[in-house]
Length: 86
Image (cartoon, rainbow, N blue to C red; front, side, top):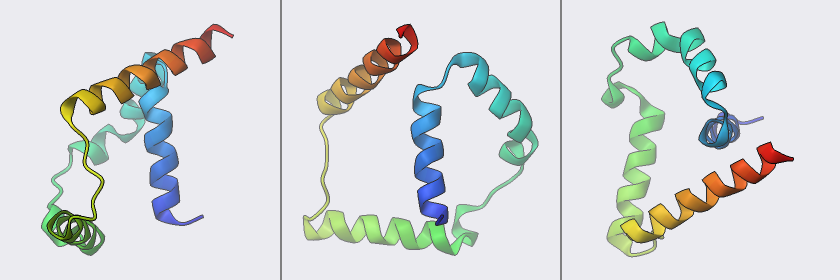
């Protein structure tokens, strides 16, 4: 599995995980998370940001309003609540 796929799966999981699981994950990774990280030294990060800036400048990026972001977040939360109720 590609690193980008793993990142996406982790992001999706974290977005809907229970509080206890988030805390457990953080505890395991805390020392890495808290360590100094310079994004400009990460070629993958720099390439991703360059790509996103180019999409915005070209007008090809899909941009959301704040209202759309909040609506999507509420929908994700509601779906997670429904899944946990089952």
